[in-house]
Amino acid sequence: MQSPKITAESIRAMKGHARIAALTAYDYPFTRLLDEAGVPLILVGDSLGMVVLGHPDTTHVTMADMEHHTRAAARAHPRALLAADLPIHSYRTLEEAVANARRLMAVGAEAVKAEGGGAIAGQVRAIVAAGIPFLGHIGMLPQHVVEEGGYHVKGREAAEREALLADAYALVEAGAFAMVLELVAAPVARAITAAVPVPTIGIGSGPDCDGQILVINDLVGTFPWFTPRFVKPRLQAFAEMRTAIDDWRRSL
Ligand code: KIV
Image (cartoon, rainbow, N blue to C red; front, top):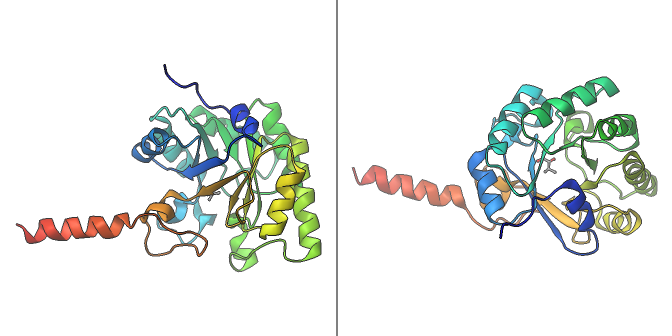
């Protein structure tokens, strides 16, 4: 018997019952691979700007990029929930947020993610009111990396800790079904996880979130030129591929 399709509601219901494993994928084969491996939440992240498109950060990613890759991932028809990122400058107003969320849903996304808490609560409410499941993202916001001057841990100061908790509550109140906590100090991530009724999915935020998300390339070594310090790769796929290619070339 085939297992039922995973929805935003199923992800929400995993809180307190099962740890949530989430990974990014940006195309058909990786989406199939992750789905066959039983990963329940797959994100077409705007991290594709770096690990697929070769940009220095996510601030160069466009809606056209996100549509192209979401369409490819969706062709795998995963059992997993397929979420896609709204890229920078695509959710500045309520109207723009809803229109662009609809564009991602039209090419196969089943939920959308955008970066921010209270500052984008209106956009989140509008997206949810349009019937589109919303995945939050607070903590370090990569779309702000240029203003922030790098990727820094959030929540080490009391004021930042309070702001993060307020952002988490704002997302819950606006209707997010889960939220990513990126580079949030581990004790703060633990406190947010205990405080909110929806799952927290950490990245570089310690072990106490309801789930963890990683960029697939970091986990399996298909972007070996940079690996975040909180990732322990399970495989060096490019190193093995390089050996295979060298062997073949020498065998000619
Ligand atoms: O863009 C992305 O891949 C992400 C995850 C790493 C959370 O936002």
